[in-house]
Image (cartoon, rainbow, N blue to C red; front, side, top):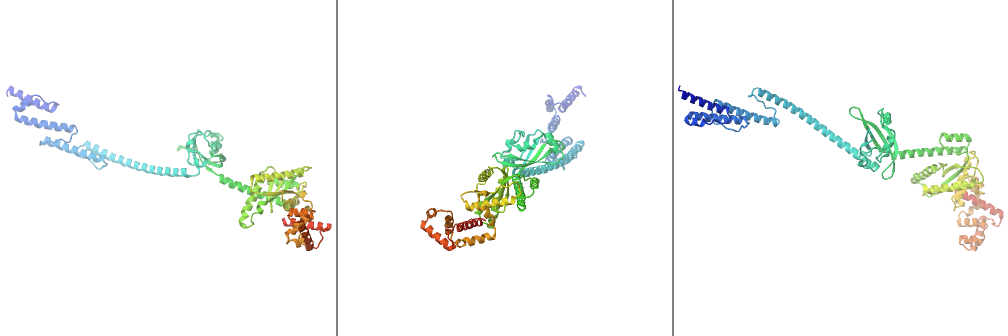
Length: 534
């Protein structure tokens, strides 16, 4: 072979190698392509293969190649496989984990393993997400129910940290205390306008923990002033708050309004005290006193502190006299009596109890020349006291005669009641009547309870019972007034009074000029007043 031809062949081979190895095309390739047509066709195919292969290496799977043969076919198959792999990858990305690769050897095994693991991870994630969503739904539902309860419950739920700072308080605090949560949250209990928390933790948190270490809640009751200045009773149930590790993180509590319960307890206590005093004093009335030391000891045992020497009063309740005695008013009548007894027992040095016809009262007294004067002043003070606290209740008071100790207790009770009964009839302008001022009525009062008293009144002045005007005229005639004076008082002519006198004498068959007759008739009139006042 000629050296010139051999050199040319070697040069062409080098140009072809440069096509395969170099990024840039050889400069002389065009010269040889023009010289050798077959070489031009070869170079065209090589360049097409080169461009197609480069596109594949860059990830461009959109190129088309018209060459046929083994090498172009292999490249086209690779392009097709890569396109299919791209589609499979997009399917996997959309959640189809059934895709598998079988044409890329070790890559296929790695890809398929990745898909299986990705499927497992996705399923685990989906289960986790489903569980999380269920938990979130349950949590939201629980929070909704909690909020519903917290926002609408009357009880107040609160949380303090270990530094005694209010970290949470339910909205019901505004209904209970008048303060909004914003006014109290994030404040120490010493600065928040909720004194009940200061009462709960009046000792240090360490001392409170000692009390609460048993695990049972600590119950504390106290009175609290609301924002609107109204006083209410509160009950707080307090527990130690712990986290999931059991560490103490603060205190939780529930506070509620127990004013109604306290009111009911107070009413029950008052009813018990009323009954206790009623039974104690009425038993003494039945026994008419007794051994003084025993009586004092009985009082001390029942926490009824009675004095050794005392004044005794009987309250007649005028208000009850105006109420009809039908069953519909029984409750109202008892309400008035209970309120009166309770209010009197709040007064210092006073013991009051319910009696059949009114209210009995005893208060300390000291014998002496001024004793009666003091009793009258005490009675006036009782009337003023009652008008202040129970302005709708009208009363009058009878005062018993004085007697040392408890020996004549029953008699003194009867005398106090009799003085009120007599006084209402005889001295209507007054509201206080002392037994010692009743004069002849002291003698007549015991006799008035007998059948003989009624018979005596009927015998002496019975014919006048149908003539109230004549009874009134008789009383004035017996008082010693002249006809003119009586006429002036009754707005009648004095001759009419004279005629009435004659009519009375005819009906009674007596002479009013007789001193003895006048005394007899006067006694009958006074006895009638006592009998009618019962």
